[in-house]
Length: 195
Image 1 (cartoon, rainbow, N blue to C red):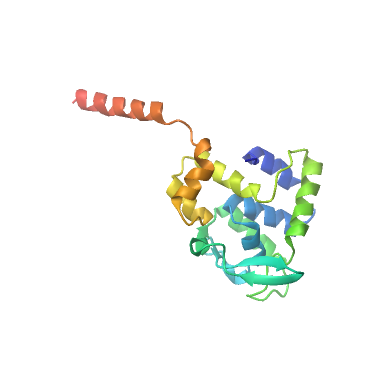
Image 2 (cartoon, rainbow, N blue to C red):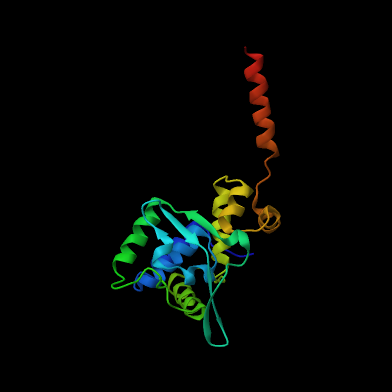
């Protein structure tokens, strides 16, 4: 599994500012962990700026040169993702530039091929290592693990059907917590001993 650290992502995405649609798409991919097909299916009505959420309830695919909107990968992939304030602000700026957009219009009316080419362009300009589009999802998950969030919360955010999927995919990223556990038990004991 290969992914970017937050610093690598920031270096990469900074090189895409010349194309607002690419810049915004990669911001959403990294900071939410959604799949590329979920991103390409997003519509104006899926964004709730007041409650700071993105609703995921469909996916975009191109099959035999036909654009299709399908159900998400799994039933648990239907979800509402909370987004941070800074991302809400960036999305609002982007939406304000989309003149005449209707509630059911796609926010990113491009193909996976377009985003793959944009990723290659950003990698060349920034000098960060090459990864796949899907690896942005791994970068998001690793960031959440680093922040100390539980596997259950991460599984819900990523739309995994089972928590085992999250644990099997990312277990190697969880630091060994045994020393931390022993230190907490020691602190509990000393707190009781001092009473």
